[in-house]
Image (tube, rainbow, N blue to C red; front, top):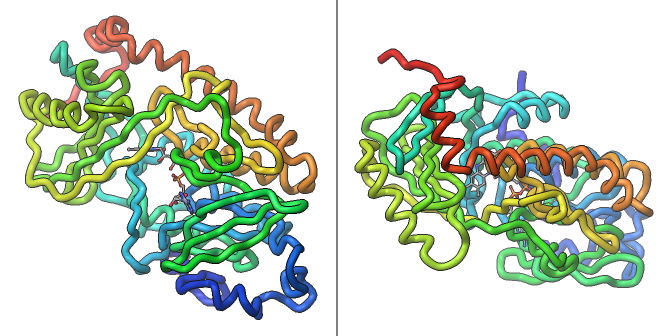
Length: 399
Ligand SMILES: Cc1cc2nc3c(=O)[nH]c(=O)nc-3n(C[C@H](O)[C@H](O)[C@H](O)COP(=O)(O)OP(=O)(O)OC[C@H]3O[C@@H](n4cnc5c(N)ncnc54)[C@H](O)[C@@H]3O)c2cc1C
């Protein structure tokens, strides 16, 4: 029987909800022979993973048998747990590359993470030229919150998982790092020999401790959910340079239609999103009653030079490092691939892990380069116009 998202709260798993200050003061949950039980000055954990999204949860799952791991996330991330104060703004589509990585990880999706409907068509719309085409695609539509909870449930009981716990600071301390966390309004600190930032596009670890000189271009992502009166059996990819030089989309999630857009970060994002709503309405896409709106940061590397794998004992994986496709904003396969590369680097030892991680992500950097080149073609309006008008590779939909 496949595991369900409820497995996260199953017996044997160390999931911390209440404030951990009490645990930290007596550390009664450490084995007696563990350094943490012997007092101050010794890093308690070998590896602290900040962020339990797809990248962090996968890494913790892969290294928990080798190292003493702390996995922390500010979201609650358990099925049926407290309502998250931060939801991940995401389309929740698993592209074939991400599906392949799940198979590499030996994971099959439980029914509980799937979202209705599963459709196989993308309607590409060029709003300016008023051209549209349908293309067959093989995405899996998931509920992103349930998907993340399920991934956390796969972390073995050997790892300490602290949810609803936010990283506030991270500093070098002797041979390791001291981190401060806030959980349920209380401050507590922990020490680890190695810190891995898996805390997403707006990574605090990257800002506090790594401070790279370059970073990928930033987009403000907005997704608005509407009641869907007339469910459409396709996703849409919407292009309009007046709205964004990237793209906008619609995705059905149960009874709701999600309209999203990746807008160049800065002023005027909301105005551009309103323009998008007006234009899709004029094009004939009906938006029902608004249900909710979510926002987030989205990175778009223009080349492999903008990826930052970390420095001085701190590694970055997933979108925290800038691993995300610049042509489609597909980030889940990159989260998995970078987590696997980091796990392989750490399995050989903690010394020199960043060098090994850098080597093991060479192919991924090549992939970013290819996607950056591809994106110049897709987002060049002239070429896109030619391809769409030609109908190359498109599907004729019989109504
Ligand atoms: C609008 C939008 C739509 C997208 N749609 C898709 C899609 O359909 N398919 C796809 O493949 N990709 C999509 N992406 C990209 C994808 O969501 C990301 O690339 C992917 O989630 C990256 O995984 P990650 O684990 O690196 O980071 P995240 O999923 O962002 O996880 C980071 C985790 O760190 C936690 N965290 C952050 N700060 C702290 C802190 N200070 N302390 C503790 N925890 C912290 C967060 O709560 C979060 O759980 C989309 C992105 C956006 C913005």
